[in-house]
Length: 210
Image (cartoon, rainbow, N blue to C red):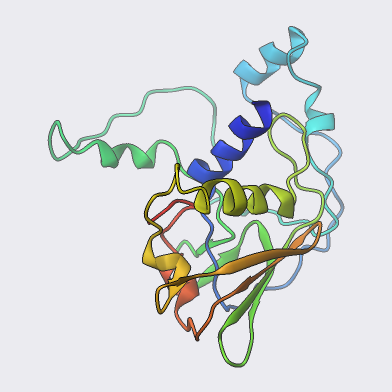
């Protein structure tokens, strides 16, 4: 059950976003030794419900450091926002976002790396290979690997009780894509015919069923 809950978070929260882009120069500085965390998480550590932050933070081999838009923010405060009406619940997405395989750059000029170390497609655009950064972890400290993505594919997408209708994102010519794990940090997706804009389809899609 715990495994299912963790993978459900993957399905809902993580955006499975690919793009054939330049991933930029890798970070070459030292791995930080000290980390801060939200006050609510500090309380959970004190209560023994979470390991210390130093144990939860991954020390990935493929480190990616996020540059803040202006500066690192402060916890707390008040946010005020307006919506288009009582039915515009989708406007709340500005409060809860996701980590994608890649994400648009802040100025909209391209894409920046996130979870993916690299994304490649074959010459015929039927095969897509996604390599994850090594050492990533869930917030509870469990490793994040290709198995988590494969779980969604095998037990959610291909489960006709959970997914009676599979969306066109995951198909070509009516045939559902095939996914396999190449190693702990690499998955490969095969389509029956070229899927040249697969990366673009997924820029704003999560690991959902549309």
